[in-house]
Image (cartoon, rainbow, N blue to C red):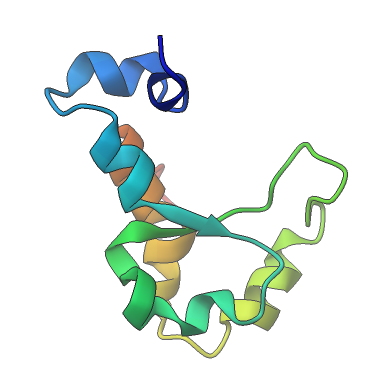
Length: 100
């Protein structure tokens, strides 16, 4: 199995007829980056996901909510929702719990 295939969870590979390439090269993530949410015209709001990088030591957890407020707080709420939950739910085909 090549590196590209290893980057995509088995559940995504098995449920998709696409090769891993569209997933690997069509999405980007950022975290602890005040500029990340402001260059969405380059990334595309549908292809970008905020991350807290948990459980790594440089993670924003347990202060992730404060970091989201700091870095994305001036973006419209629907755009923030895409960045912090909707895009990743769509990518991995998982439901978003209600209430959020």
